[in-house]
Image 1 (cartoon, rainbow, N blue to C red):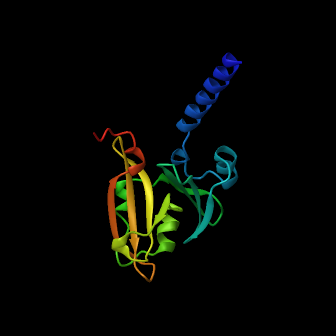
Image 2: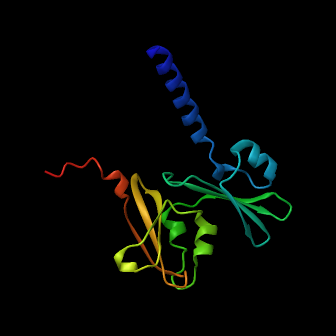
Image 3: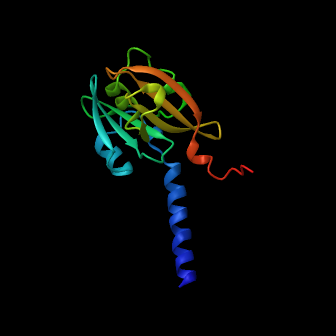
Length: 165
């Protein structure tokens, strides 16, 4: 029984590693929506964008990556990219972007918090990797749902095993 379970676990691990090599950010422009869905499955969400729609391949609350596949009006890929990184978070405009634009650009957050500094206003937290370090980007919103602040720091979920003698 143990050998069968070990074999099954090993096989599953191989499949997961192989699947991780084929990420949606490597989709060539011009592929059809049907080809994308056949290869990567059903996206978490579809959102309208100017001239077409976006397929969001994200898996909160634990994923540190988020793939956005933009389709034109005819349903063909015009862009596919991994967006959970400093460069993409750096495009968020304080005082301009809203909950709707942040969700369109990054998908749903890993966690929603209400910190004392933000009052009753939500803070959306997104996991990502900076070089090799697990990070958390916090997007603060004001009472109108407009981005008021961005803050990046180590992902607290990866700080559990630290010896604090």
